[in-house]
Image (cartoon, rainbow, N blue to C red):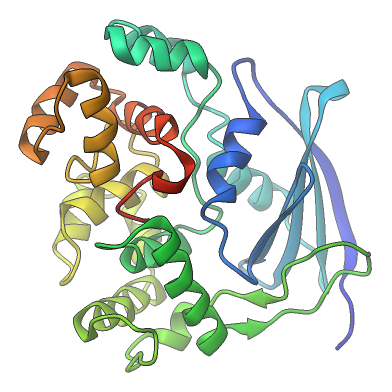
Length: 304
């Protein structure tokens, strides 16, 4: 297999109140084996682009107050497309001062914000991939979701050419939506209905569904209209893939446990939904702070 050449490198300026450490920590516990790796401070991803695939490395460049980006590919790449996707993945355009001011009005959340003032919403380079992982994370732990995702990648993924560099790199591309659309997905160790949901969601992506969500006036309702996708999945995808800052998966067990730490008892999903209204329009940022406050082994107890 031939190796990929370095096709582009550039610096992506980061704003104040940005923590690469917090961002990398969130991704660390949710890495997709074979598709994403972390080595030192570098996040490396095997990604699909409109006209090709690539290996993308991102790591901090403190002296420039930027993220250094390197792109390895067999073809020329579009920097603007990659930069825009990375800006969304790392939530570089979040109105953090407004977010923090709002959340600090709640005493307990204020303590979490004080501990991590640069914590942003970890997004996704590819909304389709994030949504598929959310389906795999339904009703299971983060660790369980990672195991299922690894099986999906191993069975249906596409071997990726390595870059012409030493180090730890991804070796597989996540299964393309066209590969899984209409497929009878088996052998993952999950309920058949959920496997069927994966295939339907892949078909939705193959038909341009995620691009259409960008201009959809009610994207969460559109997602929930897909069989097998309920409020938790829709809000999780809305938060991390569509950057709907007020999305809030209130039934998430991890969020409920985290909220119980300052409310005195673990709230029901309905009670947490009511509680979260005080954090609007940045309930999604509140969710990230609540997940981050949990012990790493239980972080985001419902997967995703």
